[in-house]
Image 1 (cartoon, rainbow, N blue to C red):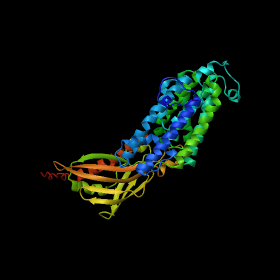
Image 2 (image 1 turned 90 degrees about the vertical axis):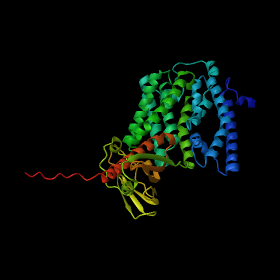
Image 3 (image 1 turned 60 degrees about the horizontal axis):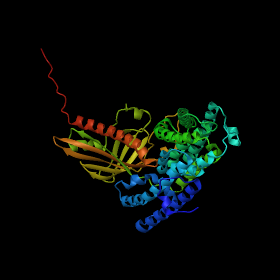
Image 4 (image 1 turned 180 degrees about the vertical axis):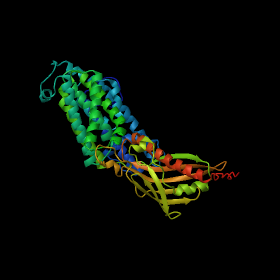
Amino acid sequence: MKLKISDLWRWEGTIDRGAYLLRGMILFAAKFSLDRSVSWLMFDREWSVIDYVRAGALPWRAFQASEDRVYWLTLLALALPFLWAGTGLTLRRLRSAGLPLWLTALFVVPVVKLIFFALLCLLPSSELVRQRPLVTGDLRGWLGLMIPSRPLGSAIFGIFLALLLAIGTVWLGTTVLRDYGWSLFVGLPFCMGLAPVLIYGYHEPRSWRSCCAVVICTVCLAGLGLLLLAFEGLICLLMAAPLALAMALVGGAVGYKIQAARWWSGQSPHLFSVMLLAMPAIMGLEHVESPAPPLLEVNSAVEVNALPETVWKQVVAFPELPRPDQWLFRLGIAYPVRAEIRGQGPGALRYCQFSTGCFEEPITVWDAPRRLKFSVSANPAPMEEWTPYHQVHPPHLQGFLEAKGGQFLLTPLPGGRTRLDGTTWYHHHLWPTLYWRCWSDAIIHRIHLRVLNHVKKNAEASVLPPPRSWPENRT
């Protein structure tokens, strides 16, 4: 096998699985050496193989305003030539395997790209396989004997095995390793879509509609199983459902294309072994060195028809709020109840009581009546899970979503009005960050508005003129 540098840049033609594996390993070794050298020599930072497992955050970090922005932009620039070469090799391998070229998009999906690379290294070239005699309904081997030949039986068998994979992986990730990473929310759903479709179409090709039905049933039953086994509550399952279903359908689409090519079944034991072993291995890599979560910020504002001096009194401590009527809080999301303060000035301790516990907030900046800033030394649980049982305490309720600090900023406006800004800085250990941030930002924004509108109502009520008393009418 001759290796040419020009082969890494070509997008036309085909490549067999052996050459694809060899060139992929060479590219990885070269990129790792380059990333590690640049990180160490130019930025005095460590870089390990484990960092590639969580490299999905690299583009987001590169364009985020932070002190590490130059570092991440440099790594992103170094990755572009390897991205070009890897994309070209993957396109050629897909042509060779007789698979659609749009599957190249999986090459850039964290965790999924590792599973996808392993699959392409196992699938034979379609031209070579077509030369072999094809036995319809091949029952050779132990796997073919285990899988029912009827559509309903093969669908049930595939769903059952996928559920075992899902529940076992969730137990390993959340209970044993206590990690909520890319492998759990991206890699596992992908395999949950891929595996049952491959089993469903083992004996004969199935339609895309029926494959989709198998994937959707697998995801729904997995969610129901996690709920009944007390692994998770309903709220978190509903939050994870869009991402899980989307990745499962992507895996199902890959499985549909593979099972539609009738020559694949000879490699099926190897493919299933990859899916079975990949998830524990990737979870183990993620667990070895957990990534530092980014510090996130949420800001909300209201305008109050009162002077800053009046608004300040309500910001420092406010009376008890009425019970919420928003569906979000009624489902179990923690909501603020009241706030009180002990002392004045920096060093004072503010207590913000939530429905699930109390935030302890040491005051760091006391600039009355303009700015009140505080850190957070104690966080209560972010929600009370809705489950069929009395209580469920999944690990992500303890320390996976933490407020690190906050502030109230009062800006005077014309006409005796005040702009009141509330800001929270927080981080969470749920990945992908961008997906889970959509949920957490929306929840924190609703919490802000509940407090800010309460402060606004009390401040405006305190400056209203007293009700006019009418003299008693005597006749």
